[in-house]
Length: 233
Image (cartoon, rainbow, N blue to C red):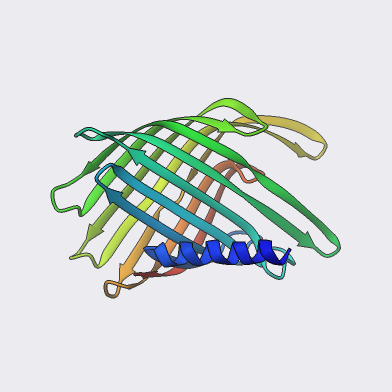
């Protein structure tokens, strides 16, 4: 147990050291009101780029610590010139929840994705867009699914304002039971646009709005805004 804990601490320390930014958000969504931290890195190189982020929620329900841990890591790979690249990705994590004496824990199923992405950046890299078409394997649930993803960034007013985010649409079956009635859904949508005011090259303050449909065990559409601060290294 001690070795596992030490390994987790070492891995998290390495992630922090290599991060480009750390964010802390206070979630204002209904029945949320908890903190979420995000550690994020994007690094291009001569063969493509590497991106990862780690999200952790703190104190959801009556949990006195980390209530959700989730991470994604993606690699864009190309041996040619041009805007298209191969894309490989992994997603996974876990969550736990407790209210009064009722508690549960669940895994976020491992997901393996592969496909192609298209990248556009303007001449001064003040704005850019990435579009992805991906095959998706959700371990133990869907051997063959799909995901469509868009990622964007835009900087304004001499980099004082930044607007960035992503949108995902994918196939995943869910069963919801409401008032004894069972209903099924097959598709999930989520987008998280962020707006930041950059005080300098390091400190930013702003907001993220999670807009989703049939996501995270909630049937239908939901809106969850946050207030956040970000430190860029």
